[in-house]
Length: 324
Image 1 (tube, helix red, strand yellow):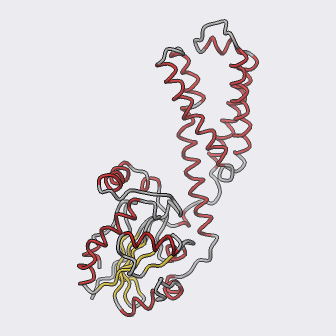
Image 2 (image 1 turned 90 degrees about the vertical axis):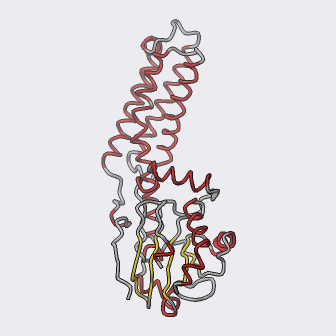
């Protein structure tokens, strides 16, 4: 008798606020005011601002510096407008973030070439660097919010209903499979993720041992059936039951949640991603589905979950041989 082992997944969509927190509005409004003030100062008093930055005076073309001030001021208007709904107006934040990344890079190159004095970098500190972290967080949360909205806009199924609703490429439901044989259901990350490919390669390698234990292997993926077929053929797993779930209904029914930033972007995840993609040659490809959705593995018997594995991060997965 298998021991029932259920760990409630800590990452579900319901624990996320659907409205942007106040601090995002405050940051964007403050950025708007700052940009407008800095832009006005440069446009109205170009010589004083140039002197503060250590440029040689008098400049040959002060109008070019004033033009930069005008551009920065226009960004300020954009930030103020984006503050009304940071999640909706994330493209404005993205454009601003790109400027705050490329601006310091351009300054460093110019300073190394001797074109600009080191003192000119003070502009990059206050115009760019201090805004990087909050802008990155706003973009991250905005993209995550968009994915949550996308998934929550679909009807939510109970797990029992999902078992009876979803059919594999062979026409079998999960309820049918689990009645016939103990089924290890592997929920994959998006097909462009190297960890998705690594999981498929590992399961293909250990398939005989898993099936020798009397366990049926099945997969859930977020691609269309056509794209899914191509992926599984690559790993010689196309004969196994697979369930296409682009709307992520089955993922949510099984409580396979969305990852936090530390589950997707930690140093450990990047290192394991490098090992998987480069050293193990699993590679990665185009993103077609939800990059935030975590993987997961459950064991189903007679329509009931008797065991589950909720990974600590995107790179984590169980020992498939012992799990089934």
